[in-house]
Length: 395
Ligand code: AMP
Ligand code: MG
Image 1 (spheres, rainbow, N blue to C red):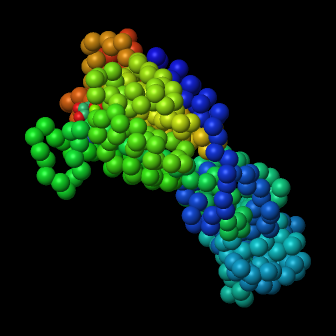
Image 2: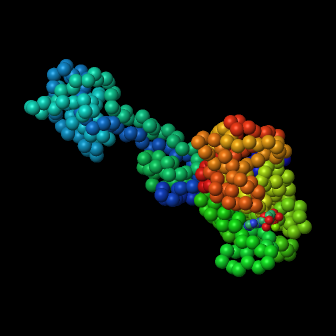
Image 3: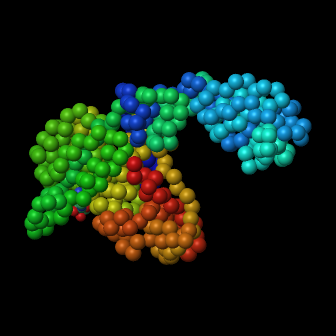
């Protein structure tokens, strides 16, 4: 199954199960959350014309080449008097432009005479150095629409409009499960044949960054009754996200439990790393089963599970930023799956980590992004490849 097809199916499933409950959060707590309603400007921005410079406000009609007396001083935060005809006003950046003034000359172009009058030598024009009322926003305009993911910049925009609280979609509750008898938590001694569980912390931290409520459901042993019971104990969550145990190996009990108590689609994705992916329901709760190899978990979470989670919250733009860069490596053997190589930019060219095994998480720690090599293609240096910065998707 091509990646786009899998993504389209997941997004359709997400749209069929939207999370609509909302809550009000303090502006400062909005980071990573999704707006539940349009943010409509309650005022013009700026609310009044203000000066873009430290300088002098005057009326162009009063400017004859003769120096003008200064009739008032206007600092930011003050309410000015109307400008007296035949004068100028000392004004500072951000201060309201007085009624009757139609331009501001910056102080560098103004010569203060011995008698304190000010001579303007450069050409002036109407509106110069004035930020007009409503240039950013006018009252009643929708500034951010419902479904917008909030970050520091959106929070700032809301703040500039005076919003102290924001209506956001409630946190998505995601249960994270790691499957596999071989897994041991860091801090415990390793027995024979055992490895440390790395996917758990990757997904828990990542989901937290995304603003989800994480239910860390620990390690699930490779055992059918236990799998059934532990899934049943999870209770009311919006998504069960598991890793491992989803290929067609003998120890893939998650798949068996889903078939018995819900439904299961097992997709063989044309993606590398990350071929096997499960989508199903356990007693009505959506389940995404990511492949267990750490690099596979990362790639499939970034490209499939993350967009799904965002779309559940009503986010429309879920595709990560991807740009084209020249390859700084050679790709001689065309593959039948789309590759997402862990790579970096080196003088504008994509280079890749030496070991692209799906078990090697270090490749991703080294990387700055995922380098996309399309199925069936070979590359020589300088050919264009897609580059998805990891910083784009890690939150
Ligand atoms: P599986 O999909 O269960 O067959 O696992 C594929 C590979 O990923 C195996 O080598 C597992 O040991 C490894 N693996 C599975 N889950 C984890 C995990 N949580 N942390 C680290 N490696 C894992
Ligand atoms: Mg396993």
